[in-house]
Length: 287
Image (cartoon, rainbow, N blue to C red):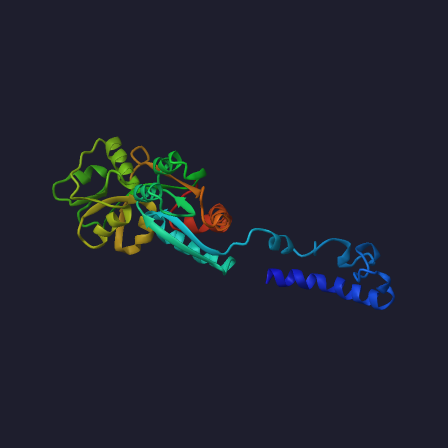
């Protein structure tokens, strides 16, 4: 509709030119009729285009359409799916496709040559892998996250903090040490002086959360955003500030992005008021 409004704004000038031509403007040998200087003040012929139309500049900007491929940390799944819906409303011809996984796996895929437009990581270290390979331009933080313990709804084992995760009667799962959530969990446990023996190390934070949701583990360390996503299926046990870890999430457009215009629009949306409201609703914090 933006282009239609721009065309409609030019109709009065076109009709005026036709009238002037019919009334004697036909002496122009080129058949172009009157010029902007010939038109009465106050008509759209005073300036090129329609300056009063707020959508006029948008029609001249980059077209945001086609397919956008975003590599994103698994913890961003739900928030980013809603962001895709919001972007589709603003740009109906844009199709957003996601590749959700652990940030370390995504970085490895990019280094191996996988095509993508945007990389959103849960770790600056994994973004650094892509940066060292000269795959990205100017990464910047867009949200942050914190850790939480998740337990079975009702907390039947009475877990109150990180120290309880070392108990023999508790089945604990963590994300793998190479996964950002696993690295952050190790930092938090170290800060608390707690040594644990996890029953398994998972490929990403969502798989870690799933173990508790399915009753296959008693407790796990995940992100606060995962607690929001899980709803009533689990219960959260807070980790105090002096033991917790703040995870900063950077985002970047790939240097060889197949759809750079859509990639730039996606990153810009993350920093918009609407984008931040969606992210905060899913438990993420300001960067």
